[in-house]
Length: 482
Image 1 (cartoon, rainbow, N blue to C red):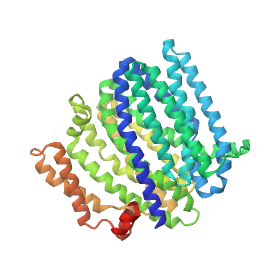
Image 2 (tube, helix red, strand yellow; image 1 turned 135 degrees about the horizontal axis):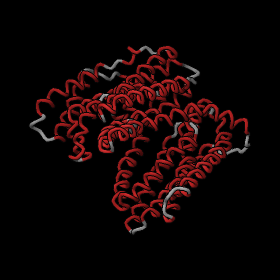
Image 3 (cartoon, rainbow, N blue to C red; image 1 turned 90 degrees about the vertical axis):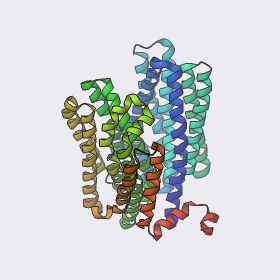
Image 4 (cartoon, rainbow, N blue to C red; image 1 turned 90 degrees about the horizontal axis):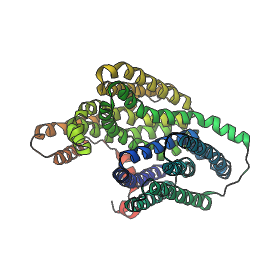
């Protein structure tokens, strides 16, 4: 019960910090786009994309490995922090050198080279170190420190960046804001880490570095392929059908992509527990995953139902009338959370039990099928071909992950059946279909959510253990009164 309470509280903490990022950073991006203009925003986007790719390559999957290894053996924290901080700093500086070379030898004006380099430096060195420190917090299941440093980063970047942009400092102001946010938040992380958990011990053991890098590479491959997967179809549609259709596909896919933060955040809190207890009781881990998938199904199924019902209204509300043609792609892509909200927990279960090679096989196979189908369908169907290829590859990903989980972890697919939230989502759709031409969009969404929750509770979807877990998230006094 105490483990469930800790996991639930960590999820709430991370989601709370994520709410600030989800609100402030899009506002900051809009401000940047308006103040810099098309050309300046393009340079800013280029620097961010390049820095993020090199960030993933530079960290080599190390944060995920650190979570798994430290969660199982926390006595090694001083050595991990000491030696791997130096390793992460070396790879970060090397990545910064690559960014400097690319910026220096491309045809960019001299007044944009320094700010572009600073943007890249803030990511590959300082944000890279912070992500490593956050992995240590995750291993000790104290996500409140991670949420605190993330909040510092967001508030400083948004506050300093907004002031400098409004005062006319342009791209230079943005680069300074990103540097301030990254450096200060990294310093906060390091200070908390050394005072609350352990002081680093620097041994500079090259054999240890080699062992860690070898173990982290599969996680690095997973992160890199996942990142590239999100952009592959947009690039292919642009090549075959032009930027207009690529924009239609991307606008629909970004809505689905944004929802992936829900299972990712959930598993950030669950993965350390899986790593800590995996060697002791595989049965306990299977039960945890079963409940996690059940709760995620209760979120993903109504979301898919709302997109199926209100795709035109969603597109119009988010992007405007000029993107309305993307509604057909959104109808196709709306089913993706049904797959991703199940296979993401299963992949982390495999990773926690040292079966990450199976995760690599599944993700590479999914990416290969997606590219092959998109190459075949995009020239013929345009952005709809990309949507179909994405849906097929995601469904294949779920099937392959379920097979691996059954074969190697003895998780039978029938244990993951969640017919009650599925029935609730279908039942909630009926009144909304009848009222779609009468009520305004936001009233329809409210009616859908209330109907869904009503049916969900009427079906007694949650058992006594579920309610104990929910109540454990409340403050202790509130929980006692309940």
